[in-house]
Amino acid sequence: MMTTQTAAGRRRLLAVGAAVIALLTANAGTIATADPAPVAVAPAAAVPLPPELDPGFYRPAPDRVAAAAEGEIIAARQVNVANFGLIPLNVDAWQVSYRSNNSRGEATPAVATVLKPRGSAPDKLMSMQIAADSLGAYCAPSYAVQQWSAATALGQVVAPLEFIVAQGALQQGWGVVIPDHQGPNEAYAAGPLAGRITLDGIRAALAFEPMRLPADTRVGMYGYSGGAIATGHAAELKRTYAPELNIVGAAEGGVPADLRYVLENGNNGIWSGMILAAVIGLSREYPELAALLNRDLDPLGTALATVKGGLCVQWNTALAPFLNVKGLLRTAGDPIDHPVVREVLDITRMGKSVPDMPMYIWQGNPDELIPVGPVNTLVDTYCQDPSATVRYTREHLSEHITTELSGGGPAMLWLRDRLNGIPAQPGCSTTDAGWLALDPEGTALSLRTFGEAFASFFGKPIGVG
Image 1 (cartoon, rainbow, N blue to C red):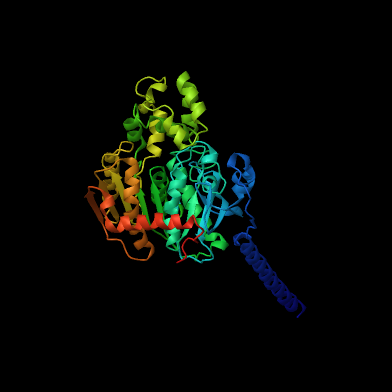
Image 2: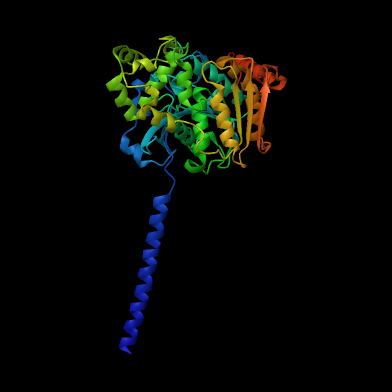
């Protein structure tokens, strides 16, 4: 009897112990998978600091970044945004600092600007990849779009102009996220890095409570030229890197699908200053290329790399046009065929995977910076997959800059349909157009965007009727 009672007692103790262990394990699992605590939002500064003078926000402690999940917000603050750094914009705006990954899968900090119409709760989000195309951190979009920013005066002329496109999205009631997709080292042209930072910026915007975005928010992406580098790579990476995101379409134009041909086409040309800036930017993400440049650049190349390494797009483009960029490298044979250069160009080439979202691509046929041939090849590569959905438009009466202006309206109309839940036409189509500005609906949308932006100069809230 005593033995039976003892055995029964032991069984009860084992059962209680098992229950306690199960409870502790469940609690431990809950703690391990709990969402991060909300991040306090700091107030806006009266005068913003450029990233070089603001390392606490732009370059948080590496261990803090490494401990965060991809897209997890590390810090947040309100900002005052403005057109051309001077004319305030009547919207809700913040900056978020978050974790992303570089091209080697290592944790890296990133920053994005998130905006919405004043007091609204949007149910759509556009990720706008601005063509930063610069090598100085003070040229980054997050600094350039702020009131009292000196970026425009110092040569960042593209970001303020493309910021008006973002305002076109705000005018339609959408939320907007603008990532600094070149990363903390301003690795201009490093597409896989830019794609990851873009996708993690979308994650951060969706998780940022003041944006009030539903978890299933439809997301669209938009980028031209340098912004298309980020947009295109994000579209290709999304399936494996951020499959949970509800990205319903991506619009990209002036697409640098293969940097080898951009370099070949621009060498000795009017855009050679920008081409050299891209080579320098790539070296900041790929150490093997940096080592090659440090070893084999001739004295002129070394001097130009030193000067251009801190400049914004305007001055980088203006400095050293008609330059023989390839001639600056003292290597045997054509530098573009050097194993290190060839590997970097292959890594950054688009077309390695088919985006799992509808794509709108537009390209100037006579584009003097970005040749149309590799874009044709990219579209053909995508469309070999029967699941691809691509609408491709080639414009024949334009060049690089005017193609963005004429093609932006039709691209936004296409993206609006996707965000409104209208399915894209399945399959692939290619259209040849003389001049996209003749599209009446697209031109009307562009004119309304500029008109509303002008009205905002006088304090009209963006996105409010």
